[in-house]
Image 1 (cartoon, helix red, strand yellow):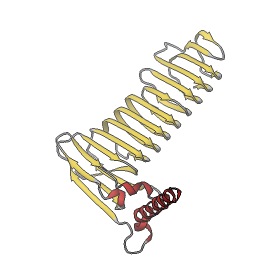
Image 2: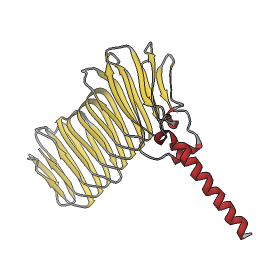
Image 3: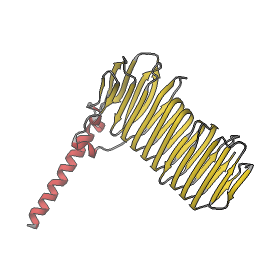
Image 4: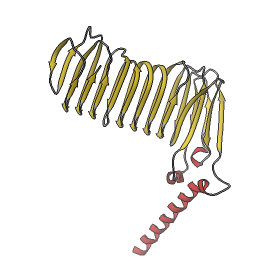
Length: 291
């Protein structure tokens, strides 16, 4: 019986080794190395672009054409990539992966998705193990940008949108020069860094730090932090602070005109007319608020 069990384990080992070699052979054997794969679709009536990447890093760029395209290395994991369109959306999807792709060595493959400069609709990105990058060079204003990344970092710069909704289960969120009317961001294990920001903010951080520097605050700010430090730079805004922490310290450098409550664990006060509410609750971490 022991010999049989041992033989089975040896066979399993050979299967795993063979699957690993098969999944990675295109990366190492001359003549069958990966080549670029290009797909494109002419944007018609669709007002949404949806990207679903299981384990590929995604970079979005724009061009002056009316097509949505994807450029990707044609590895095993990219062979099933498809681009389709209906009356509502252009969809870039990776429908399935071969079972042996789980043994693939090396870095994620890279997708470069190019969208029309004239597009002003909804942009949605779903990723498994994926980094997402969008450095916009246009002054176009999108209806919404939504991301849901299981494991990976998100980086966005020079973005104007009516609404933004970003989620990273494990990874960092970095936003530079973003303008929006409504914003929700969430990380379970990762940091949030936002600079030159215009807009309101709802943020939930389970384990990580959050740093925000505003150009202009629009409407209220609400943050819940389970474990991590918070650093907020509010500029010259007339704010109303409602801040509390269970374990940690509060440091405030904003010149408040009225103070209702002040201490190491809680702070309530108003600067000027108090046009904007900043409601911040933390379980564990230090809170720093400054102009």
